Length: 346
Image (cartoon, rainbow, N blue to C red):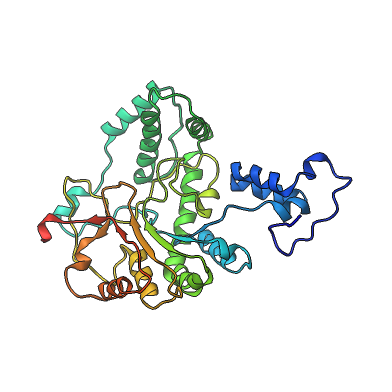
């Protein structure tokens, strides 16, 4: 019998319990139906499972969170796991740090304010649905209000739907809702970590150093929809998996999400803060840092009303030059771009 995980010496199992004497093929069938968290726990039980239980690891995440950066480097530094990676996902969603100072009267009109009447309606709706959460605490209104809306949205999405397992799992998270001041403190720690990574550019250096470490790599996806809906992320990144139970927070988006019927795109800025993932990834691919393996770059908004600023194609710039180089690569196969188009800039 051969064992999938190389370098792991599997001891004799003649006197072991039946559960530890399954053929490797049966263990792998079980693992096919189990989440990676369960497979990790199996590997901690004994050397037999460590030798035969394989993690389903075909993608890695990179973002401005140090946990994501550390796990990315750890996987890239392994001997076996990098051969399984076919996709890198750049989480371009930055945690919101508070409303910006308005630049003019137009911006001042759209800066969020404390809408007590609206919050009262949300509170009443939550109460009518039997949801009792203590929202008191010394936290900013821009944090508390979206947290309330998150719980309200969960209730609205459930509506009259059956009690599916995913609904039950989210209801359990709501039942264990963190006190607001604890959630606020945890969020502030995340913001500080984000600032440190942004200032050090550790995420950019990590991707630059290790994008060539994955021989099967074919796709790089850049998205700002990673955090998805409350307690239901689009991707369970290492950062998100480390969240405490019941942690409710303002869902980050990363790129401008318009609150109006039509988007407004600023002139493209090669050195701006938005769309950093697109600018970095196109540069690395243009420089062939991936050893010419990536055949499918993707900008994915997951139906959110935003996207890549289409004005990047308006006139010559550094990012556009890199993008054109990527399109000219001999192994280029597929492109997916969700674009945000400003009708007034045509």
